[in-house]
Image (cartoon, rainbow, N blue to C red):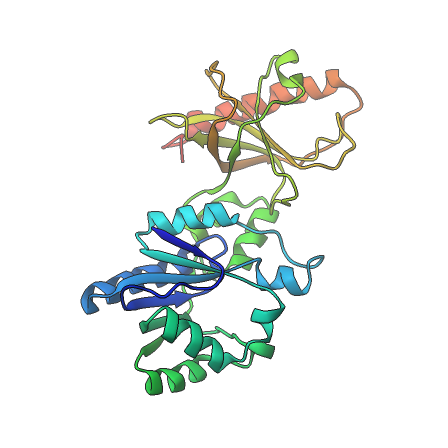
Length: 313
C-alpha cells in the first residue's frame, strides 16, 4: 500500500476514493471499504482513502477531543489489511481548515488524486466552516467528471455503528459489544519496553508498552491475548492505566502478563487484544494486597479462557 503524507501527490492512475477519519476502522468503515473495492474492480480503478492527521476535533478542541480508537499507524495497518492501494494522510492545520469546500474537491480530489468514483458517509461534511456536503460533491462531480455516492449508516447489535458508540462500549467495559461494532476485538499495539521489573519481583513478569501521550479509551484489568510473537497468539491478563499504587506520574502504561511464556521480547512490536474486563484499576494500601489481587485477577482470566470457545479472540 502506498502512503502519502501531506499534500497529495498526483496519482498515476484514476481512482475510486473514499474520505473520512476512519478512527477504529469499525464495521461502518469496513462496509465503505468493501463497496470501494467492488466499485474499483468493476470500473478498473485504483482504490484510495483520504484521511486526516490530527483528527479535526483534536485540532479545534484538543482538551475536549475524545481518545482515539487507533493510532495513525494502527489505522494504516488496518487499511492495508483491507486491500487499499493508496492512503493519503492530509495534515489537518489552519490552511486545510480554511480551504473552501469546492477548492478542496477540485484541487486535491480531481487534479491530484484523479478521482472518478467517490464514496462518503451519509453525514459527511467538509471544507471551511463545514459548508461542504454530499450535494456539493454531487454538483462538483457532475462538472468535473466523477460519480459520487453516499453510504447509509450500518447497524450492529441494535446500534448505529460509529466511533463514538465503540468508545462508549469500551468505557463501560462492554468488550463483547465493542467487538460486535468493530468486527474484531479492540486492540492496542506498541513496542515492548523495559520497566521497573516489579511484576517479575512479585512473580508476575509483564511485557510493558508505554502509551506516551496517548490516552486510551478504556482502563482497568482485562483478560486478553497478544499477537505479533510468531504464528501463535498468547493469552494472559492485561493492566491498562496509570498504576496508582506504584506510581504518581500519571503516565499511562499497558502491562501484559502472558501465561506459560518465558521468552525475552524487549523491542518486539505486539498487538494486545482486550477480550473481557475483569475490574477497574484501583489503588492498594500495600504491595502485599496488590499481589493478592493480581493472583485473583490471573485466576479469573484463566477461568475466562478455560470457558472460551476460541481463547485467542
